[in-house]
Image 1 (cartoon, rainbow, N blue to C red):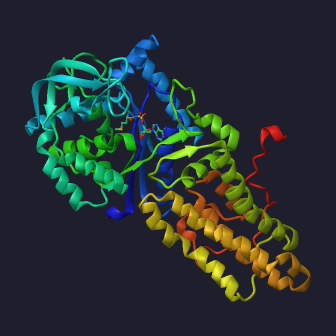
Image 2 (image 1 turned 180 degrees about the horizontal axis):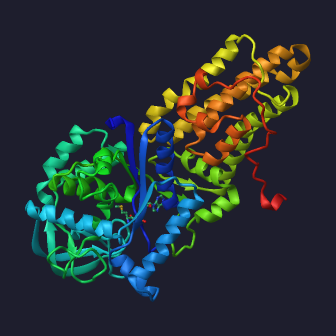
Image 3 (image 1 turned 60 degrees about the vertical axis):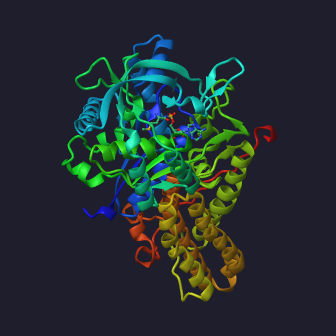
Length: 517
Ligand code: MSP
């Protein structure tokens, strides 16, 4: 299959020591919207998510819960699978780093690196932050009032001294810089790209890639006192899932290198420095692109366990509705920037963009058709300029959306669709089909047809972001199940006059403040 026809997108794999919060749901949601868009656009998609189950942090959490690490991870990894279900994520696979397929894959990657002389045995003495599972140099740390040293991420570090294998990262600086230069799309947004380039330019040290002071990890081949550094283990999931170490497997050949690793801004360095260096050093291809999105705060505050203010996805879905939450997260802030969640802005989007603009448009059009056109798609007459203009903007949407999805500009994609929603609402007001009912019923039928056809386009194109509601909207337009992909956009898939339509129902209820009820 030709390269352009497949699409491999991945989320980071989530640490299981935390209960899933909206930040986790956000990363996967962005991938879900992309995966759905690409599938509807005819691509063969592989969408991967999963859980990161090894490392000192998880071992500590298991101990605190009084459980064996494997029992602990079996239990908590389920929370992330439940989240995927609750958020209607369409992932094709869910990988766990404790699976046999993955352990085999990590060990094979290690062997390759070792064979090529990229890994050597030494000893590590330095600072380590368990919370980040990351090593830090003395110069990066600050001193807290209690005398503890703190990493730039805010995590406490501890002094570690142990035998360790090292990966020769110091030798990859120039090759990485060349790679970034030759692949301008590899890392987005630009601010992150510049940050990574200047970090690499400042010089890279060899990276400690094994630990001996705990056991909860993938054993190093031929040296079982060591377990692999959890990031080497974790990053490898992206190739495990497509069949590594069998590089001749059809899935590996089809899907690797990945089209996109979606990550949060906190884990950019791991994905854009360590990961391409590991892969190139093992003679494998680096991924095509990494996009680093921003972080959400809650009503202006950083979400944290100690503040107990983490936004819980199930509770949000219960309160506002699933598609409303999905829409809000992708529409509210420019993708890539940080964003603040507030109840007020959530309700504003729900009641404005969804209930008033899109919901009202569909409801008005469908109920006028239901009442005045015999519950059937009306028969259009000749189109006027105004009709052609509105239809033209609907027909032209896909061409505008493709580049926006390709650069992960979800907010702009939605804004572009909502311009047509706005045009449609203005067209209804100008054409006033309710007045035509008496004066010119044939013209009323044409106007309602143009509107229904425009709503069909909007519904098909909004499916990646709000799949449930758009399925219902397409049901109400009696669009057959096999005519809901992007191939059905434009005149070829146009609604057929005379098709019976079901009774319309509102899709986006207004949020009414509890206190006002
Ligand atoms: N296990 C590593 C990833 C390994 S990938 C090979 C990890 N896991 S994590 O569970 O801590 O974080 C996963 C993702 O959630 C990251 O992309 C992170 O940026 C994202 N978020 C965590 N909190 C967030 C917010 N408050 N807002 C948005 N995203 C946030 O890192």
